[in-house]
Image (tube, rainbow over all chains, first blue to last red; front, side, top):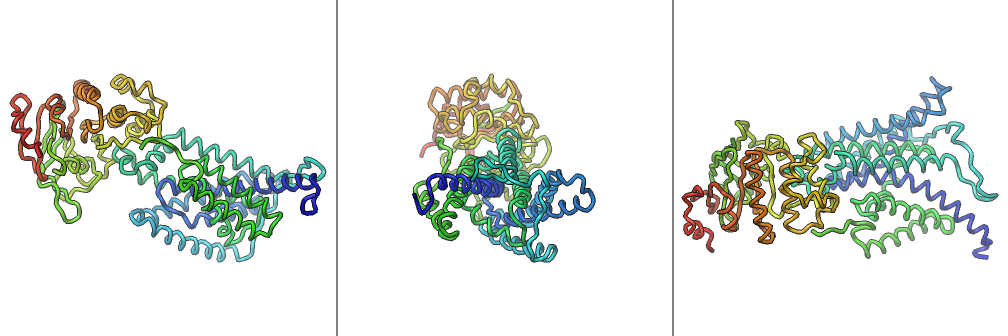
Length: 308
Length: 229
């Protein structure tokens, strides 16, 4: 007996909390992917990343309503359409923001922090004006409702499983793009040595713009996934941005694998600790773990070792 | 072919290059020598567009490149092998060469490059950062050649490279010139290497070209005096 739970109960609790942690992991990872490639490529910390996610969530909300009104028969597949729309909307606005705002600030990297923070406030207010201050939710299609019972006490929700599968696929696509495409080749070259990349013929400014757009687009997909597990409000992005920063810094800014591992560590410790302690104590402990590990490994969890 | 007229370059308020004139014909290897701090690397960096030009002209086949960013200059046929090689250490050898291929739109490394540098073919999948200094130098040259240049700029290619490999590099440079008939401009401090490869030798001092010799009438003693500290 531990804290009044029997061993069997305890292992079920761990399994359920681990599963809840995995859902959190999915959202963290989708957010962190975009943030990490943008930060790794151009050293810009996009404070508005959470708002790009929420933009994707609102797009999903709109699409679901569109389907309910005009195509109720096809509601089962609305999510896939919504995901594409969310990606395109967030990506397009990302491209525009890079062109209007970020590219003028590359010489002053710290100012991008301020500029994107201002942008996040503008976007929050725009959401509030357009969609209202109240949180909105989408109705899940029938096939995504319900749960699978693994044992009598352990249940896993189908929407959670779906979000995880989606995250795995998106991560796989990003990895493929980074390591197999010409865009990825150029991104990795620019990350290693920007000046030299220009001198071998890479248009670094163009790559910056593409990367920023893609990162924001992925945040839009994260927003789509987010609607499956939570309700969307104008400031919901703020709740996730800090944790996502933590994931990026902890994982090592240039490592995809590091981002995955650190998202997993942080989300799991968060969700397991949350069950036994209060939410804020869980946060304190998670932060302590991260700070402790970062003192031992300032470069993050995974950093490539080569001769310089 | 490659024409530089009255090139002036400054770091902030301080002028570094004062009216450099340089013309290179296809198939010619020109060496620029001089002591440390005389502006050789600055010349190379301003030619490729890594640092801005204050005034003057850089032309390739009549096209004026002076105001263009470096990637656009590469598209016009300039290629650059920097001092200290600056290969992309975390990427594989093959990927390094592919970065040079970006402007051509190709993604397959031409056989010609691997036949010039067989060692790179052998180490294709290794991380470039784990190669030796000489191998990295060969990789930097291969990466520059991948963009199919008309003019190849090399900044101190012998630095940190063992003597036997220095001979190889000299041989390869002459081979490339033969194969592709391109202009080669090389900055150096090692006189033996320069005498081995160059058709024409320019001496640089305090941001000016102060002496010029073609190889058949080179006065080795006079040039050695310029290099002496």
